[in-house]
Length: 374
Image 1 (cartoon, rainbow, N blue to C red):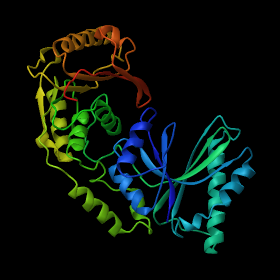
Image 2 (tube, rainbow, N blue to C red; image 1 turned 60 degrees about the vertical axis):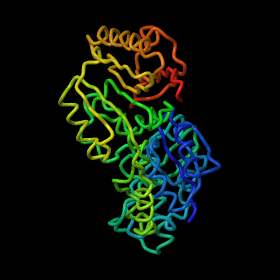
Image 3 (cartoon, helix red, strand yellow; image 1 turned 90 degrees about the vertical axis):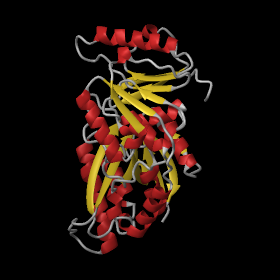
Image 4 (cartoon, rainbow, N blue to C red; image 1 turned 120 degrees about the horizontal axis):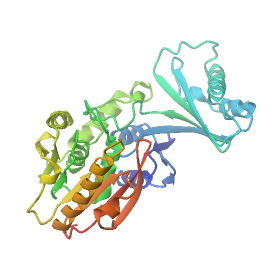
């Protein structure tokens, strides 16, 4: 069966997700705020859940229509043949959101959609009551400027949950954002990569997975695997293909942090991800970092100074980063921070500057491209 599919993303990541989809062979993509739309069948649902590094989740778009009354919402939802997707024992879990719409009460919208879905199911299966004891179908009713979009989530836990991170540390960076930072950096597997503030190792682990062509969703499960139309053999085929695609590349990835406890967590995370042989985690204070290598890449998410009393420390740190760049003037630096005065402290305007969100926090990705090897 062919579906209209949506890969949802964090704002600012859409173009990277679209590029990933193109590299997987998908065409006729539609890019909007926070999502990339494409078409595919059950196999494509399995492939994109398994392979997309920067998307948040994969949704099936079921319907889109205008509604300014609850009756219009009900009738628009009822017009969908839900029984063609949801089995008779499917658990119908409805969530919602409403932005700039006449129908602003999300609980009411959820209740009406659930009633309409059940009525549609009654029409299909010719029965009044459903056990809802089977696989989960999470339906979202999203209203934006009175346009209703109905979707079903195929992913379950967000795609950032790769299964390797036991502890995110104090300032967690989502795996999907870390992968985005690496993909935006133009780093290649045969280049030295350093994260001088590596924390629990997420950036380097994602880089190692990219460099070895390891599918990010290879070692986890997805909610749609329980659906009767998503056969086990289909998933076996996708996972076997992903395992066969892993490459054993020579990589030099180095992570530094001042906290040995955090480094122990980073080493365990890398081991769980299966990339421990590619990354060398070392205890080192940033002010002591130096390198004699002519070419290299730094991708890092340094402290932002969000807490009281940390601002002066962070400002000094950013000045030191700028001094380091002067010494490593043929290296590429890629730095994510929410600190608005970063470039002034760093001492140089970025080659490229992209707005990204770390959770709900607005950040900027400052990129300095000076590596002739690119």
